[in-house]
Length: 129
Image (cartoon, rainbow, N blue to C red; front, top):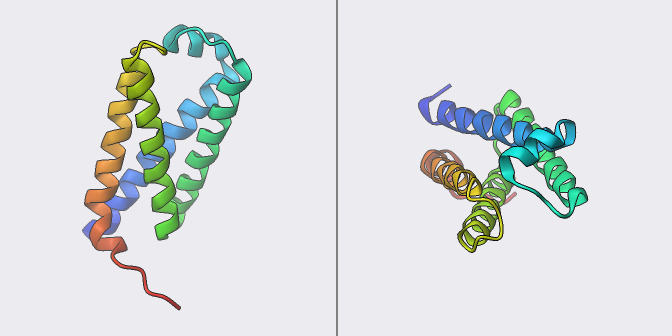
């Protein structure tokens, strides 16, 4: 495995762990999740977002285990991180959600930057079949 592949593997495992753990957390221990992230009005939405994050995390873990990173998977990883970062910065910045979400926003930006930095040479232009 070359250096570029190892780097992609590392970022995939990191995002997989981060998304799976933060996604499952409100599903299994809502009280502690709310204690850290602040009160929520719509618990169903907290659980829905958690489940979606967990699914993405598990898919990234599967890709990392297989050492396969198709462009579509990388697009989902980057796209989901971008959406979460935008929500974190806009709504925490406006005081609508807890400032703790700013830490998540920084983590999401770091994931995006890492995928872009390490993935360029590995992913490159996709060829058509």
